[in-house]
Image (cartoon, rainbow, N blue to C red; front, side, top):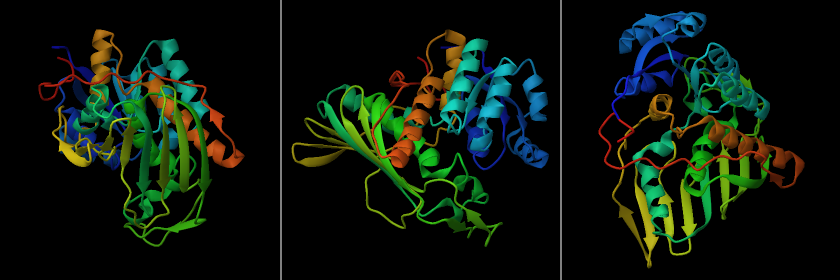
Length: 367
């Protein structure tokens, strides 16, 4: 679909912003025109690196009448504030994950957007890449029969080993579930639909963390959130998944995601990536399946482009606010269940996002 690109402004020019700046300039639906950061030098550096026309304050970016979409790449605890300010300025907003650090914050964002008649989107958009889109096609086409269960595992020893500014991972709004859980929960919803009930167990195995990366080597960080979480998810369309997210494990030999069906098993690639490999087990053997869709490389920004198409056409966009809120609701409920020792019914729901078309031209999302 040929369309006028949506003008985009980025708020937050930290570590993740580089890949967004690179990718959105290759997506036909977007025109990156401005960037802002609390540290002006960061914004200036990104503008110079990626030829972004305007460096400004967040307030100036939000006041620019030409900007239609704000891409919020700030730290999680600022997502709600920035999103609400963008919405108040009459702009659609796409947050890095999570949508907010609490259900209440997420609801405020969704309700404000509906009142202003603008769109909300949220990372991750990795489920729109070639790997998980291929998995979705295999499930939809019945390769493994009816899905009956799934497992999902994220394991590592903590981001203080490598990240230059890792403190926020251990503050409220951080932790492995809210940091990495959105990739796994979103992928499961894209493949198996919304969640109706959860239970879980949580722990903070180490009360403090010592940064071993530069430039903050040796700094001790107090841990405010669970760092080892195990959840059980029951899906509205049937099937149950076990999901673990941890910063407390040195090494593991677990699958990223597997989906178990009445006829076979599907091995889903890393949901923090866009490509493969995709494998299926059928009739006694594993077989790798060629990718059926485009965007096998790091495609962060696809969700923002999909929002731009939605703005122009009126169709639903895939990495949308309702799904992001449902993901947040599910993750918060797992932590609640860990504290309370019970099953929790999930009040929210969402539509399973539509699969992408096959054989798209590079840089496009609609045929």
